[in-house]
Image 1 (cartoon, rainbow, N blue to C red):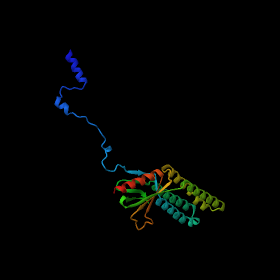
Image 2: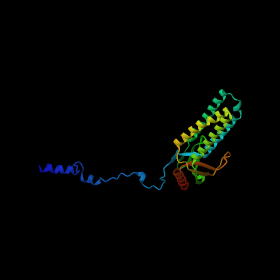
Image 3: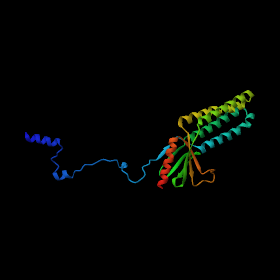
Image 4: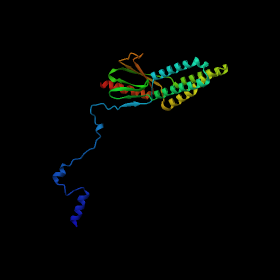
Length: 237
């Protein structure tokens, strides 16, 4: 009876009869530590990525395409039949909306090797950290004010052509309003607080580029993250 009680106490305390004293002394305590938390002397900055960006070059190109298309239609529209004019306008604004949607897919990716500007003029641009000369930021005014001014001008022009009896011009202007509202709705749904413009000065300017600066429009927090990530990786090169 006494032997059974001692045996039970030994089992409760973790003693195993199959383990000899020599083997028991060799068992050591193990701490499970996440190796990623141990300083290794290497960079601990993760890859930076953000979709809340716009590229100034995209906006400029869209406005350029819009005014070119508008001027191409503006002059001959008075001589076109409605059956021809309306399909042309639908096609033109559909193409412009497609271009705008592609440009709103812009995003930025920063890793230890480079800065990748995606959907910049419908293509991806890679900037190597060693060739980036400087990064600076500028605060912007509220972009919604400019949009409201543009819509107000369109409404005034629409009213003027209605009173003048220029119905083809009325149709030309009227098609801009739903297009502008669709673009504005998509912009407000996908982008927010675009109040900061960030300039990335690159060492090598291509022959067709006017300026060595790449302009990124984003919110203040994202701009700070972009600037900090670039400066960090530049310092490690």
